[in-house]
Amino acid sequence: MSERVVISPTSRQEGHAELVMEVDDEGIVTKGRYFSITPVRGLEKMLTGKAPESAPVYAQRICGVCPIPHTLASAEAMDDSLGIEIPKAARQLRELTLAAHHINSHAIHQFLIAPDVVPDDLMVTAINSVSEIRKTVQMVVDIVAGEGIHPSDVRIGGMASNISEVARKRLYARCKQLKPKLDAHVDLIIGLVADKGFPKGLGVTNAPPLATDVLYGNRENFDLDRFTEIMPESWFDDPEIAKRACSTVPLYDGRNVEVGPRARSAVYGGFTEKGVVAQHVARALEMKTALSKIIDTLAELDTSAPVMADFDIRGTNKLGVGAIEGPRGMDVHMAQVANGKTQFYSCLVPTTWNIPTMGIATEGFHHEFGPHVIRAYDPCLSCATHMIVIDDEDRSILKDEMVRI
Image 1 (cartoon, rainbow, N blue to C red):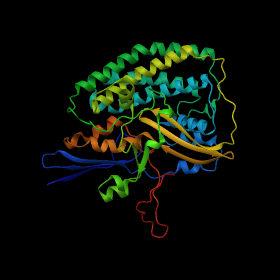
Image 2: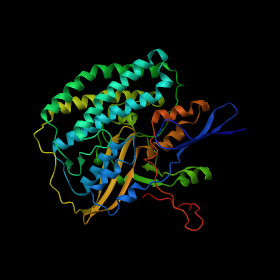
Image 3: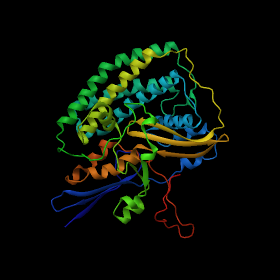
Image 4: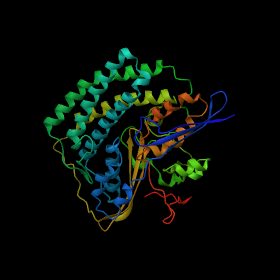
């Protein structure tokens, strides 16, 4: 007889979620449903009617784990809506900011999985390594973007200011010194994950990968015409779960897709492995890619070059798109500006793509392995929460009327 196993709340992710698994008599998961139950906050709605400059400031507070991707996606969407082409040096500073954030975020994830994969005799080594790596890359963000958590120097039209030549040289030297330490850390994590003995096929999904760039993001590689969005009641076969889920399900070419480090590695690096182990490996290897990007960009950056474009803030009501490859995957913001005010704003965040993929990935394994799937994808659920419409009279949920705000 089938048994229902509910893990609620789940752990090790931003926000609140629930994992519901149907388990057969042999303890095998026959169906897994993973969904967000984070309360609604409505940050997108708050931006409507406000000055465009408010968008990156509000958007970076969508999530405490991914403030930098949201800041950049917001600025890129506004740039696109306003018809701005930012200067080369501004683009380089934005790329430096995101590359450093990739490394920092991946290191945090490795800290979170350490109890699962790192033996006691190597725990101090691994944690010290994570700390040293994070300290260096957070310094990059602090100097380049103004602040490590909420990067205040990322602006519509470019960046608030260029960095000094002294700062460029200092960051270049520190990042070059970090390289052997980071390489050793990546090798350690990959070896430990490989040796852990996860079941073959754990977390493998048939969802195709979706990515717009190797590391930063490119709106030209995201086709809005191929994107559709459905309500939870159209995805989940359990009415109770469909009613409680608070995020929509995005599809690309009518299918759910996988985004994130493994997807980027598959699309741009020919990476063919799938599942939990592959996700950890791809995440670790991306740290090397990001550090190389930082070093190369700092070597090329002209610190005397302009970093702000001239533009008309009034706008033309064009729908602007910003596509940023955050650590957890592609983060798309959409904005329209007319008469100097934001007319429309919407976010399509990484976890929204990955939630249905994780539901597929739980099937076919002993139920005790289910949480490992969550840790592999590192979901950030506050980002994925939008709005449920309720009846003004009896406060009941109005079925089929969940909307993005």
